Image (cartoon, rainbow, N blue to C red):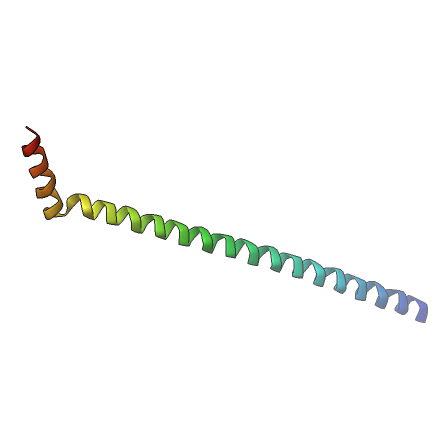
Length: 75
């Protein structure tokens, strides 16, 4: 009977260690994906900011008047 308990204890210990390694690798994978998504989000925010600045430059009244003035001087 004690041999059965020893085999059972070794089996449980091995299962716990395998599960711990699995959780650790899953945690590393999730952390890597999170960092990747944060970098992508930062890049998209920067791209959006530059497009907003470009749009504001296009609809700025002073810029519109300046472009309108350039069009009239070319005629």
